[in-house]
Structures are given as structure tokens and as C-alpha cells.
Image 1: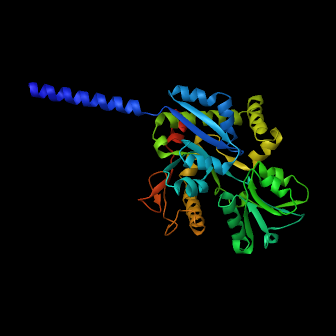
Image 2 (image 1 turned 180 degrees about the vertical axis):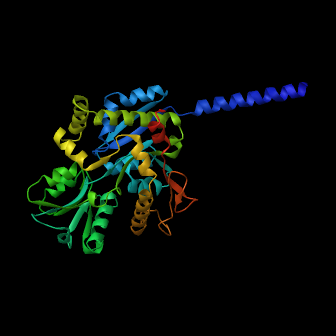
Image 3 (image 1 turned 90 degrees about the vertical axis):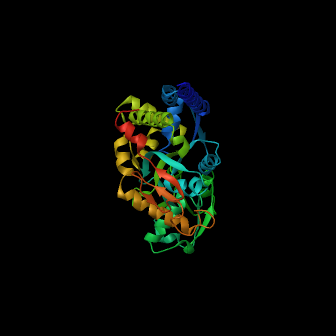
Length: 354
């Protein structure tokens, strides 16, 4: 009897120590990076309006949302471990953090570009065919590069028909204002600024490949395992979406805040939203990530990334990095899954369980 009692006591002590260890090591402070883009401006508004803090406090954590002026640098900082999450596109999620060995989860799919990314040439009445032989300025190996490749394929051209010039998104408007630069590929609000210049021709945009350039909040898969963080993030996001999509002064005030922060006005921001397929509620986002179209898109993205050497040194094929879809299906390697599309928290939001 004494032996049984001692064993039970030992088990209780071990359990208590385990619980204490988990509690002591639990992370309570998270950092999220975001950069200027029509579909990500809501994060800045949610932070400054107190929406993020409200939801974080509800779950007993803190969430710091930090703005970057350079998109790629924000992803690099996330990949280096300085942030727990970052806004980025589907392709960049695969080719930067995932290819860098950071197991990442697309926790919120906020929208897809439906005209917000585009190719612009100097000169009136130009067509895509006129890009042949030109230097094209863009953020090399980013989603702009992917858009260019898709555009060229539609016109029976390849990248061998032109020269890509790597240009930071922070510099691309100024570059286009010089005499030397004649063609650019970029995204809003930069795209709107460039297309507003005199004597230019937009020749291709993402509405011609709908659903392929997806804008997401990506977090480390370890962070995604913390239900407090996941619920707080989707709670804050969809409260902000509700404010944006409401009728009247509330929506105008929220969107005006976002417009000013991105360097435009309400009319300009609404024009950018018109070229964006926003998921203002969780239900269509859940449907989108569960669709066959996402599977096809990610297969195309993986193929482009492999052809451009973006999947890591020594990658033998486009399936080198496994991409997990909702439901557990894996595209590519099942032993090297580094990018995951999850509908877990968006479903909770859709069901009112946040």
C-alpha cells in the first residue's frame, strides 16, 4: 500500500512539474511584421485603433504589430526569427521562409490581387509585346517576377526576351521617374502612383490571372500552435474587416485612416480595393483555401520557383518543399513540409468561436 501511495505521489509531483514547465516556457509576447499594401493596411489600423490590443488582452498575451517600409526586408526579418509572423504573398512564403527552412503557416488568407499588381511601360498606346528587348525594373524573384513570367507566357515570350533589373519596392517609383527606366512591374499603392503619371501604358495586371497572387498573414508553425495567438489574430482581423465593410461613416473613417497611412486618400484607397478580392468574412476565405484552384496555383508557383532556383540550393525538382493544404494533402515532399495552408482559425472565426 505504501508503495502504491509513493508511486501515486511521484506521479502527481511529475505531473505538477510538467505543468509548471509548460507554463513557465509558454510564450506570451508575439511580434507581427507588415508592409504597405492595400490588403495589409488593415493591420496598421487594427494596431493603432486598439483592436489588436483588445483581442490580445482577451487571451492573456501581447501582440506587437510593426510596420516595414521595405516588403522583402520584413519577410527577411521574419525568416531570421525577429518576428513570429509577417504579411506576405503565397509565392514569397514558399521561396523565402519555407525555402530558408522556417516551417510556416498561412493563418489568415485576406485577399487575392485582382488588378493590384501590374506591368507598366512608358509611352502611350503600348502593348505587352513592346516589352521585348527592354530592361524591366522589379523586385527580383518576388511575386512581381512571377507576374512578369505569366504575362510573357501569355504573349509567347520568355525572360530571355528582356532583361530583369532588381529594384527595391522603396525605390521603384523614383526609378520610373528617370529617363533610363522604361518598364516596371509593381503593386499598389506604387502601381497607382506610376499609372497616374503622364504618357504611360498599363499592359498586364493580376486580374488576368485571378486567384494566383494571394495576400496572407503567415506565422511560424510553432506560433500557429498557440490557440491564444490564432484566435486573437483572426478576432482582430475580422473585427477590422467588419469595420471596413460597414456602411457609412464608420467604414469611411477606417478606410481613410488606411488611405492616409498608405499615401493616398479615400478615393484612391477605394480604387485599390476595387482591384482586390478582399475576403471580408471568414467563410469565403475558408472556401478559397479549400478549393482545387489553390492546389493548381501552388503547383504553378512551385514550378516557377524551381525554374528560378528559389527552392534552395540543390533542390532536385519543384516538389522539393512540401506544401500542406487544408485536410492534410501535401503537394511535393511529405518529409520536407515547410509551408502549410490552415483553415483552423478562420473556421473558428466563421463559427463565432473566437
